[in-house]
Length: 555
Image 1 (cartoon, rainbow, N blue to C red):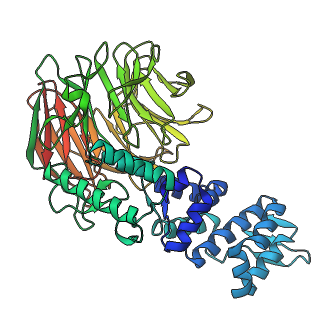
Image 2 (image 1 turned 60 degrees about the vertical axis):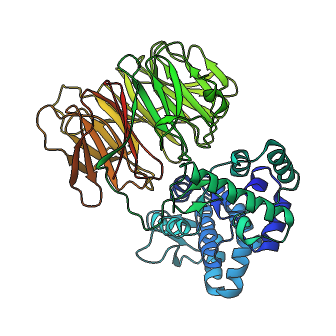
Image 3 (image 1 turned 180 degrees about the vertical axis):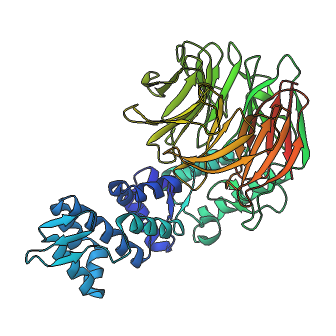
């Protein structure tokens, strides 16, 4: 069904949902979806839910809220259209006529007081739009909360990615891909719930065989639950996030070729590193060895840049990896064959320090020692926008969950919030507990999962804080180490229950966001630590250092 939706086969999708009674309850990003609801981007929300099978009560609440806000904006034609021509509102008319009648009355009113949340109708009798104690913002939040239980997220192009990963002879794999490209007969639960056709039975058997082979190879731990639709091994729902206590694997690079950056792929299959010698390597982190499943690496061919690779980003579908180098260049690679897809020869005038993909993988955001942030188009190969305002090197950047903002961290001691469309800096945040007149380097900004407006700020002190886009400090965590323990990097666990910081003392500090306490400290290296990264859905952390070692840590 996801394949049909992505390829605009809408009638086939509707028919398949109706015949199988299986619904495609997915959105591109839950965080972005919820943010669109709370921000009132109703055009985006209504487009996203057109193929979702939502409870009648939730649909009625949603459409009622849209109608109310359209009336408030004086978009009376659009409000009338929704009220009289959409199924949820027609259902409301028949099941709750008084509630529907109130909307009709509000639609013909003359004045709306946004502060009082009431209309003054023709006969000057006040009529409240929202019940007492309720506001527009509270209604949006309630609808957003209800939506979180109804939808899930899957990466794009999962059908083709799953077929591409099947461990099959080439002829069988090609035949299977052709079968589904031509018929498009796949949906959530098809591997186990739709067994009417020979084609689906064959696909289910082969996919299960493929996953068993991956388990045999050690790619999937034994006993781990598997989500075939998302195409990844899922941690059991009840398994808690836990801090690391022991070394799992050790990868030696040597002091002359140490790792400068490392990232796990979003699907959790690979660990990708960029080194000071320019090499970009894809690792099987379960064995600690180069991934030989990739043909080019098996033949000792690698992705490589002219100078040291200082930053990496993996696309959300795990198809591409972008690398930024010390000479200011950026290159885009296809992971499965090592092909260089695009070169940005003059991405920056100085070294590229950080890089990330837009949520649709069509653009790259990068920052540099040249004090600028730039947005690049992958198709055009051109710089699209430039964000100027920092006065020193930029150490980290991120898109907000909804993609509307860019957040940056700089050695000038500030975090800046930028409007992604206009490039305007909407807020400059000076990190707390820093004496006036001093600039303490901000190492990282990391988005908090499941909360659109919160992010973790790690600067060169012994304290890490959770802030919002308005600059308010919501929580703070301190190591208590007064000298020689300032943090150099940090990361979050997938659900945001743990904040992991590494200090100048080579110690990993594990802070629980649930208890608010430092729960564990662990010495991870013997020389300066360069970075840290967390697996997307396992209790696994990678740290890398100037000692030429990359270490994988587990509970």
